[in-house]
Length: 131
Image: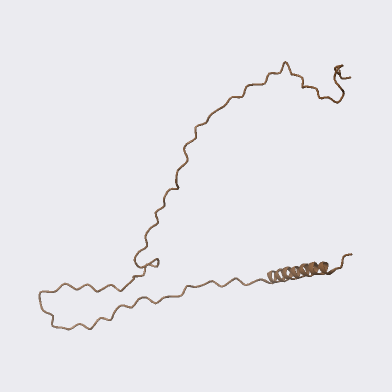
């Protein structure tokens, strides 16, 4: 049976007993030196685009450079040179979507039907009168 002091009422709170014999170890503080945080993100330099744009096509037709003059006069007349045409633009080939197999079509139809059944069930449950 627990010992009760004679002058204390049964509902009173007793002060906690001091524990003797157990010594709490002293906690030590350890400091760790961390490197400083960077103040800003490093700057990334992007390459500049060529004057023709990302495709590399020239922006304008370059002017023809004059040929060096020969010391002797020419006796023949050259045919006029047609201006250079830019290369025709070829449309990019877009790959067609792969065809659905029969199993994929059946699974898609089953998923759609299950969704419709779920919506119908919710509406049916909402319409049931509750009393």
